[in-house]
Image (cartoon, rainbow, N blue to C red; front, side, top):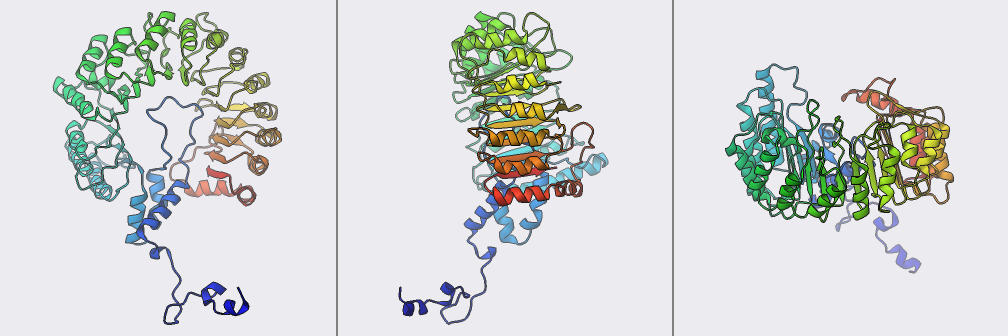
Length: 573
């Protein structure tokens, strides 16, 4: 382009203000000038830019479906964005259109009120929520807490109002997941909802009142599942065992006879235990046969205590024969505080016949010969098909961990140890020796903390294939956090993409700074730091205190953001 052509450019092209056709300068454009569709995208990005309040687990208990990549909007998130959403009608509309997942507790913060005032407040909130739900045209997931309403008359009123709005034909049928916590099951209201939500594929009901339902109510619940049959992907009966009276094999089989064939169900949860009885109902060949008739395509199964005939090598053949597509199995409550444990022949037969994606196991006794950690390790390796992900939810110490991993567990990709009492350096080296381990979570009980020093964390960081590391309630002694990240940065090749620390305490600023050098890292999440043993817990409304603690690390956070903008950093102190 010649210089003469350049002189013909309008002022905007040369960096000046925009000009209208008449030559007058146009006012600067703002958010309100954006089309409504683009404004919704802006709001969606702002919501998705926030992590959930807690980091995901390393090897979570089997879930009905893969977690959706949307942020659940709860009380804290709603309050955080309330100012922005109330600027004008366009902002509010875009905010409501951007919400895909919502979690609402109608009784939150009302515990100190008298029963009459609390009920009135719940009804007012329910009315306001009904109006708001009618404007959430993209809502896909809804968790609704209706429990704790003092006056019985208010429960059907609120549930009829809310589910009536969701079932209205004028509302876009976008809802796919619904979880309801209530004192009394609103079965008739839920039936009205189904008419307007043809995409609903997951329904989870939690009933606080354990009074057994009448036969007519059980039949209504069965018909509710029947109407969902063409699209239902999960059957979660764990919260309903009490109200359905499924405490005997006969009652269990009778209920499943009322259900139609649920051909699309991939997830079944029958894991229900109470402290006084260990496990309400043992899984038997007859009960699982009833389940397989209704749900022939089950991929994930969660069961409670196993009967003796199933807790054996022959039982494994029965289990796998009934569920030919099974890839994830949770036996986490099979011990249930009772004397029964999962037997090594069962585990060995499972690993021999099928390569499981996830296996969750109960108590591993360090003394009882029926199942010691070394026997468990041998059983997992017996068929040369150990599960890709293993979760142990009971107390472990250094010796069982070394015994469990003595064989290497080649093929293990994820390991979740949720209650580690103590961990020595040889145990850390044993964990790091797993050649294929990609996801590791170490946790401790809520009233204690797992101490890890520099030598411990440096050993853990040498795991050759580690991609994600989760530390829950860990006391990072001295330079433990800095040593962990520094060792990760010096590994060749670098593999870690995410580091997640929840309810830990100790010095972490140097670790945040050192994350700059972990070239493979893409996510750093630090939640409730300092809330482990020895630190006072933060309340839900202590925003000022959280901000004050967070400011202590502002220099390190700014440094990380400046030199590694590709790392998604989230902190909730």
